[in-house]
Image (cartoon, rainbow, N blue to C red; front, side, top):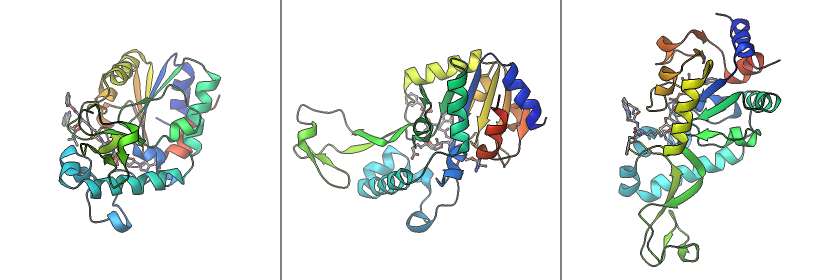
Length: 239
Ligand code: BJW
């Protein structure tokens, strides 16, 4: 199937669901999750750092990793793929549901509204343990990580780590979109992490993958487009 063929599927679809992963932001300069990391963090495996266990074992190291990534993300811009999705949704109200595994906020910064963010938001943080009465904004002591100056409860990034449940309502809305779509575009994800990857397998309509490399979901696809998000999405979503 060619890009043009999938573009015709988009044109014919009443409802399009889009599931994005880290490759969506690669051309903005955000490293993907399973890319070799560079610099300071090259010797750490992100899969080992993105867990509550790792945070409890070494809170300052994991906090600093997130601080480093937050700063990097703040310095990049949405790319042509993010913009194409936001512009399509504006031109076609109610026709597109955008589901992302990304925590970088670039879809929202490109102007997409109602984004279903399955894995949270790296720019926000929350209490690690159930907050007590003393845990409030006035009591946050600066630090790495910041913590309650009375009981020591730590702040943690508001992202979903391995072994943690996804936000229930957001995931239910994503499942609903998958079950009702005529077409799902699966962009820039390795398809290795569940339950997000499972959405591509529950999609009612056709599934088209946009990724320069093979993925674990290729067998579930009606079309596999070997290209990048910033080059292929503007072609698929033009009117
Ligand atoms: C480009 C490109 C370009 C490059 N253009 N493309 C079923 C089976 C097996 C295991 C499980 C299962 N169900 C659950 C599990 C366990 C686990 C899991 O999936 N493990 C697998 C690794 C085996 N899942 C969980 O633990 C989830 N929770 C859960 O199931 O809870 C159950 C529960 C219920 C009730 C109570 C309690 C618990 C949670 C998963 C959370 C994932 N979190 C992370 C970290 C977020 C925070 C952070 O960023 O630090 O989310 S992990 C990481 O992986 C991140 C990503 O969102 C996610 C997906 O990665 P993604 O986006 O696919 O990135 P990459 O790097 O893998 O791939 C990039 C792709 O881009 C590649 O394909 C490139 O080719 C491509 N690319 N340039 C287009 N220009």
